Length: 175
Image (tube, rainbow, N blue to C red; front, side, top):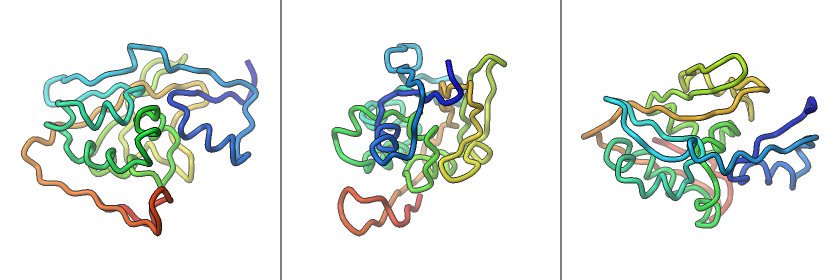
């Protein structure tokens, strides 16, 4: 319905772009109520997280804490509680902000991102998904539907980020 449309999941990334007048979509499509894109499950040695799973749900999910503790730890540092309750894992990744916490974490965990569009379903390794500043490998007519992470049982991990003041963008994050 136009050349410039944006997907709204939790809204935390898109609303900031709109507020800063960095995006001018003709159409905003709210996918926040698609239940099939939310939740965490296991598939063999892979942890599958729906793109609409909120940061709060990621932090507190027992499967994420057990099999991808680094993701839970890093997600707990995202913004503030209000953002963590509304913002989604898929939204943060699709936004592809290099200053964000989660793209680096999915890269460190050797994750894969699954996109669906009119051409079907495709899986993109995280190392190929983030292609530039605020640019991902998603085609304009594709939607990120899930994140796939190999289980990392028994791994040690730590996430640290450094920023000048609370609530500011990080200067550097290390996983």
